[in-house]
Length: 125
Image 1 (cartoon, rainbow, N blue to C red):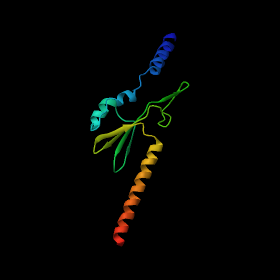
Image 2 (cartoon, rainbow, N blue to C red; image 1 turned 180 degrees about the vertical axis):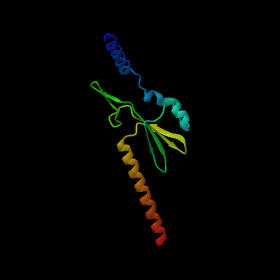
Image 3 (cartoon, helix red, strand yellow; image 1 turned 90 degrees about the vertical axis):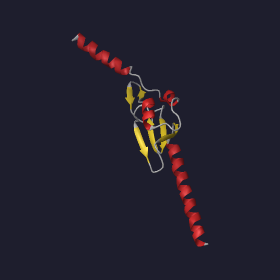
Image 4 (cartoon, rainbow, N blue to C red; image 1 turned 120 degrees about the vertical axis):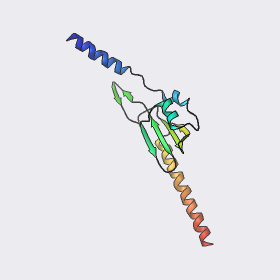
């Protein structure tokens, strides 16, 4: 019975000491124009992807430990890294937040509204 508890304790101890990927350090090895397989070689597979007609994003984060409980929550993570691809190549990387996403969407809406207004103005002349 004692061996069983020692084995269970050892497994829990090793799981608690498991290495997490340092995405900030990994981002130092990224470069503009890198391909997706190259990014996977540096950072591994993304935890989540976000795709639209203009770009593709790969999002990375580690679990957050609160007390003794790990939480796998992207919004709580303090080491979130977002790699953005255009035409299959890295165009930028950062710790893109929800506020950044809202700003980007607002800018896109304003740009399309401005373009539509200009086309309407040209058509009326």
